[in-house]
Image (tube, rainbow, N blue to C red):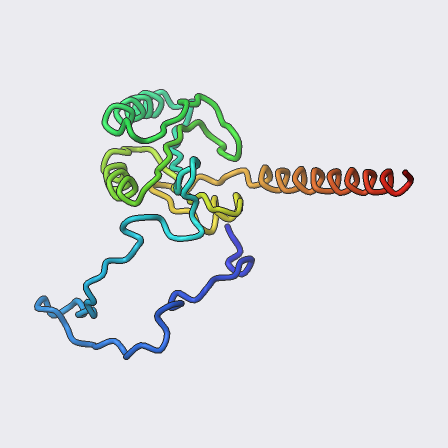
Length: 196
């Protein structure tokens, strides 16, 4: 479980401050509220909002899990993988894994989404067609925040499968080691230049 206080959150109203209070007026159904229309759709219909990646990684990854020791799930997952490849050839679809990989404790395959239109089409389709399988939907952000993206910012379809978060801590440690080594090399080069 993610500690919600480990992160900071910008105000949801950023950019919408100091506006007139919203009305409590109801629509004809008597339940829903009338919203102020200004004739402009949100930019989120056209592109993923910052800080989501808009590069070759795609804005979202979807990991679709199956228990590799359950023959019924394996058969269903293979059929779903094939169907997705045939019905959504514009999406990037990865290898059908028959074992755990990375932080994923059971077998899975991955689908990348690059636009809000792809997200809007594929996620509802997957809600209906995923059958007995669980799926993790997580964003890719400009600044790599892999642990946060796989936990606090993640959404699940079906049962949540606990991820092996240790891998993200190991990745951070390796990155720190590389940074320290680069600093040592830069310092050695400076010292070498000063001696000349």
